[in-house]
Structure formats: C-alpha cells, structure tokens
Image (cartoon, rainbow over all chains, first blue to last red; front, side, top):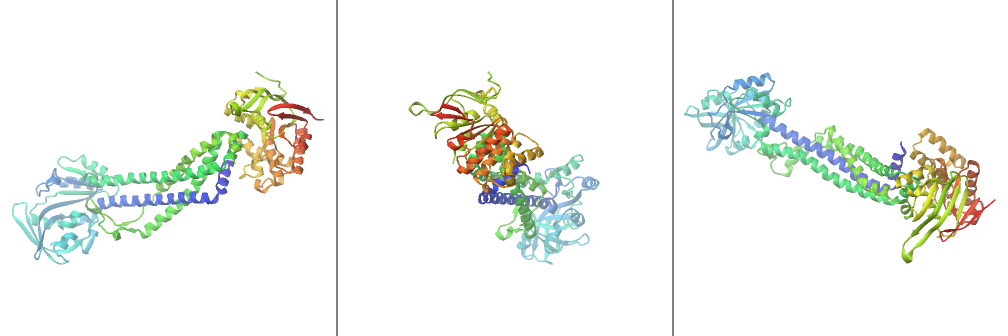
Length: 406
Length: 233
C-alpha cells in the first residue's frame, strides 16, 4: 500500500470514535440514497408501465378533435391502414369504439361510457382484462356480457349476473337499447373507467349504436421495444387525417410530475451530500487541528503543500471508500427487503392515483448498478471536496507557528 | 553573489527581530557565521539567546529581518517558499527537540518518508533505510511505532530520518533536551561518530555543558549575537 494511504488509514484509526461516527453517517447516507434511487425508479417505471400497459398505451390515434368533442361520428377514417402499420412494425394495437348513454340496473341508473373492444386484441395489447375485481372478463366468443367499472357498479348496485339495461342515442338517430349481463367488475385502473366504463364486445357495440364499424381510438403499445415517441414516429408518416398523441401528450401533468420526480431524486441526493459534506468537513477540520504540529513538522522537512493536501484528501477518500463499500452493501440489503416485503402505502389511507390513473400502492425497489455507481462516486467526491478546505488550511501552515502549537 | 564553495552555510549580518518599538526583541542580531563541510558545531547559550531562531533562519523555516544567508554558495534569503521547501528537502536534515516523528508511521517508515518525498524507488529506499537504522543500532526496532520506543530510540529514528537522504547538513535543535544525561551523552557520541566516519556536517544547539564538550566547535550566542567562537581539540 502506498505510504500516503498507509498514513491516511492509520490516521483514521487514531480517533476510532470520531471515525466511527462519521463513517456511520456516511454509510447511512449511501444506503438510504441507494434505496431511495431504487424505490423512486420502481415507482416511476411502475407508473409508466401502468399508464402504457393497462389501458392508455404508449400512443393513441384519434380522429382530429375527437378528444375535445367525443362525438360518435368523429371516427378514424380507414383504421385498417394504421392497424396494418402496427402489424408490420410489430406494435400491438387495439381498436376501440366509444359511445355515451345511460346504464340502468333495476331502479338505479347512471351515465356511462360504452367501450366496444376486440377482446382478443385488447388482451394482446393491454393488461386491464386481468384487473378484474369480481367475475371474469369476456372472451372473443362471449357476447351480450359487459364488464363495468367499480364505482359504476357500486352506484348501480350491480353484482355479477345483474341485468344492465343500456339506453343510447345510436349513430343513425334511433334510440338503441339492449340488455346485457354483468360478467365482471373492474379493479381501479383509471378514474374515468372506474366511474363510467361499460365494456362490451365490438359486435355488441355496433348493434347497440348502429355504428357500422366506426373506430374512435387505436391504442398502441410496443411493450417496451420502442419509446412512445418512436412509436408515434412510425405512424406520423402515414398520418394524414388523424391525431397521434403519446401518453406524455395525453397526460401532460402526469408526465411532468414523473419527470420532476426523476429530477427530485437528484435534488434530494444533493441535499444529502451537502449534509454529508459538512459532517466530513467538521471531522477533517478537527483531525487536521489535532495534527497541526505534525503538518508543521512535515512542512519543515520539505514536504510540498500539494502532498499535505493529498495526505488530508486521501484520509477523506479512504473514509469515503469504506463508507461506499459498507453503504452499498447496506443499500443492496435494503433494496432486497423492499423487494421482498414492499411498503404498502394503501394502509396510510387515501387513494393511490394521480391524474385519474391508479398506481400500485405497494412500493418496491428497482435497483440498477448505476444507482450504486452514482452513490459511490458522489460520496467519494463529496468527501474529498469537503476535505479540501482543511487540507488547504494545513498545507498553508507556517511550519514554525504550527510546530509551536500545543 | 557566491560565497566560498567549501563553506556550506554562511550568514552575513543576519538579523531576526520580533515585535516593534519598546517590545522589540532582537532574537538574532548581526550574526556573521561560516560553517564548513564536515564540521561538528554546537551553538551554545542560555534559553532565549536565539539558538533556535538562528537555526530557523539558516534552514529557511523563518525569514531574516535583514542580512543574508548562503547555503552551498547560493543566497537563500531570496528564495520563495517553494524553493526553501526544496532546499530543506534536498540539503537539510532536521532533528527536533521533541523528536517530531509521525506517530502513525513505524521507525522504518519515518526514516523512509523523506526518501519517498525525494522520489527514490522503493527497493532503493528499503536498502538505504535499513542500512541507516542498522548504523544507528535500531534495526530491530524498524517495525515499532514511536509510542513503542524510548526517548533515546525515538531521537535515533529522528537522526536516521535526517541522515537517510544524505543531506548537506544536519540541523539539530536541542536534540538532547528531552533525554536523560546518559542517553543524551550516547546520542551525541553517536552523532560525533557519524560526523567522524561519514563526514556528515552537524550544526546543533544545546546548553548542556557535557554535550558541548563533545563538539569540535562551539559558538556561544548571547542576546542574539555571537559572543564567542571556540574550537575544541
């Protein structure tokens, strides 16, 4: 081991209590940061996955101005063209039709948003068919059965097997009405679906609304093969009379919030490191003050100021290296505990949703090597930087004055 | 301006004053001095006579108020702090009253430190340090830390550190002050032997008459000025 590191290590062991206290603070900081990074990443990734894989998708295609008006007549011209592109680019696509009307069970009725879906494609593209609270999601062969949102079910007093009467204004101007059996009740996916969704087979929808195959939305999901922007770009070439929006454009508040959350991690870590830096600064100031005579003697012998700076900084570096190793191990262990047990936020009350999108209430961790690398490098850099002031102070000592100190 | 080449140290009207006005202290006052190669010189005088201050200004640890100091013919009073540090590293070996060893380094490592600063390769350092420790009779204490050594042994380590790098001169500020008389005498004998056999130049301060008896030359300092320059046979 080079003499500089030997001196640094032994100097640290001279005041074991002080070193232990500083080391503990550094280890705690490393472990917490690693766990925080992993937890935040899990939460952000999970949020994006929920948004893109449950129902909304990475990209949605609508007729122009459909999102503002939601008219039954504003459907996508030639949806097959877009479905063909999706197939060619290996992007899962689910065509949907939407209509509005009344849903009644016995004496209870409520406004409803009717979804006409292709069960097979929906299952291939999204996971909301798995989010069933009661009953089952219908398959391609089952018709005259609907799956409804949780809150709608509550307001209609719906149970599995209840008869739901749909009353709507059909595309041809006539009144469409039909009776369907409630086959399933959805878990919370989004506020909109929770409150008003009545999901039925595309064929049932066409009959109810006389919609003649109108498609109002094509939801796309590349299942992480492409980013939402890349998916959108694939369709931009063919887009003439449609509106193509990524989920970030569809849910700008949420996208901004997730972006801010990412930045917030670095702001948190910066605050952590400032606190750590002051701790190390204090320790190194005390250590150099204790050894002021030694630095004076070293300068008297002809030691150059840069070497004294290096000696002090090496001490901080050795301390941070030990903290980084122990802190990383503790951080990985914390992440393992988080992964195994999770933190269930639902027990703290309140709903786990933002911008109408439901989130997994159990926080876990998604640890990446970059979290450890960043924490280790930042901790070491912070310690070395914090030790620069006492190091420069020691290096600038007058040897005579320093050796006269008691 | 250059001085005689066989002269290692020369001071010309060197003065070092502290304070001002009525509180002015003339620690070193108009000192003219020459130290030649191979000398074993003691600076004697009572406490406060300016012995340490004279050594400090000679070594460049402190600046003169006026006058000039030459080392190997070069005027060092004009040197920058960086050049003075280089001068101390390459030409001067120090032995301090309080030993001033690094407590976290073993005897071997303390002696090795200066050689490392000079950039000597590790294998050369090992041979050199072991030879010096052996010469000073403390090779068996090489792995001991200063706290595990007696005062005399610590001062031997300090001498080993001072001479390991073959300095032009060893400056020792009251090297025996913290030692008992027997250990002090043996240490001075050892320094004299190094001077005799190795030709190392020593300039040290002391007010112990038994130590001064061993010196070849004694400069007596009174109130900062040289009052006597005796040569012993």
